[in-house]
Image 1 (cartoon, rainbow, N blue to C red):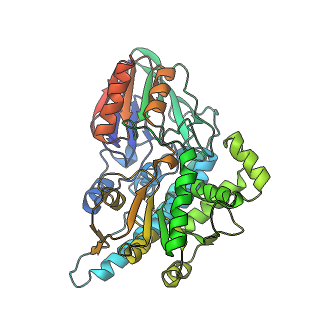
Image 2 (image 1 turned 90 degrees about the vertical axis):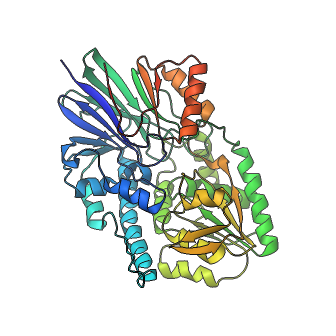
Image 3 (image 1 turned 45 degrees about the horizontal axis):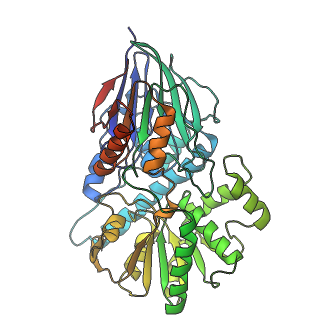
Length: 467
């Protein structure tokens, strides 16, 4: 009798670190291999521990290129995995950049931390290096949306548009179970109904099981139309005060969305000519990829039309895109108002930490959080109003204003998620992952109130037989 089981090894009761293992009697398929983000010691322990032998994985399916979904692939392959890695072409292209950047950031942060704490003999070690990132990159096999492939014998798969970021996909898998042929759909991160850049995801057909994110399962997003006005107001204030707006931004999608809004505001002459710096080598490379694909059908009609009319939707003519460390450091000596957009989006590594530690103690600074901030991250502590935070182990007083804009989120909100599940109508069960406990519980309640049955909230390491 055919065996089929799914187990949850990350993003179960929390947002980051997505790892879900589908097992049949003919192979093991890993759905994403993401990095945990949060308190340094806790995240490090979780990231270094696999609940299954990496060498036992027969295929890996990657939903998209965010680090909390792809960031541990280099460690997986470093620890003995030899499996093919399936992804859409754009996800593969972007993930290669993300993984290499992650390796460099870990090495750079470790070097800086170890130097600061040499007298205390405190050290940290990177999870992996650039050679490991290149090893993972070498395993990619490209699959276009809708193209069928067989990750392991007896399992037929295809990627569907998830509408979350460029190249993001849902994995649709048809497999044998003791009860017959079943269809399992893993959404990865799901895009929202209203979006600046991408086409809206369409619910899959004939699903038996659905594994779906629940990041914003307890709230609704602010309308996208509100984003332009609020950002224009912050820019006007910074211009008047001679202050600095620091935006910790995910290099993938969020940076491009923010730049697009700034471009529109400039185009309509609604903001002054404030200097704008995108300080992230990875964000520079990714924005170039977005620009290259801007006529692609994965982008929605509104963006494609604006790009054709404007000609420079990501502002390459007037926005300074910084690659070198020297260019980044030079911003500390510049005076006057400016906008600095830098990774990482949750303030857990990279150049944003240096901008924060140099500017948090200035009352004219505004820190604009434009994305989800996971529990335990520096971004979440700033969002929660902490007045003193530690960066590289050193304490800093927070005198800067901290604002949050949920309009930019590329995740589906509660209403989007409920509508998606109802339309997909999974016949045998829905698993809620990638959400904090409160958000996941709220979504489960909303689904139950809407008549959706067999909704489960798996715990870390929990396994379920599929029949």
